[in-house]
Image (cartoon, rainbow, N blue to C red; front, side):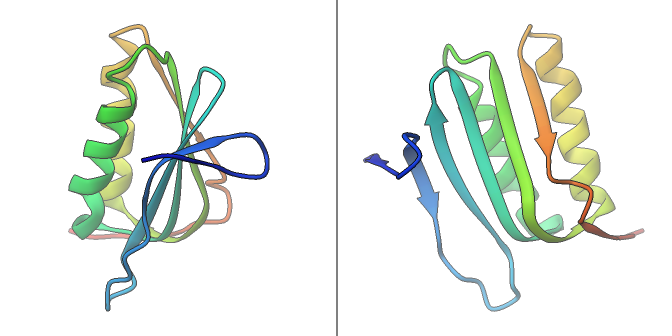
Length: 112
């Protein structure tokens, strides 16, 4: 099910479930020929699978560009960042593009 939002984008999927540990929330919208995945909360090892599935699913369609909006991500750990960069490289080989925006304000957390 999708719904229109004020700026003309169509929200395709929204996961607003709140996890007790803070977790990550995802909102997927389509704006023209772009897919936008807005993340908020903590992007950590527990979130890797959901975020990977979301990005890969978004790029299965005809859209060539997926934007991952990280402006509301509070913390990202190194494993999650590595996963996003790995996906970015693999989709480039398919002629598609993954763009990250809003990463300047994120705090990073090292995990060994």
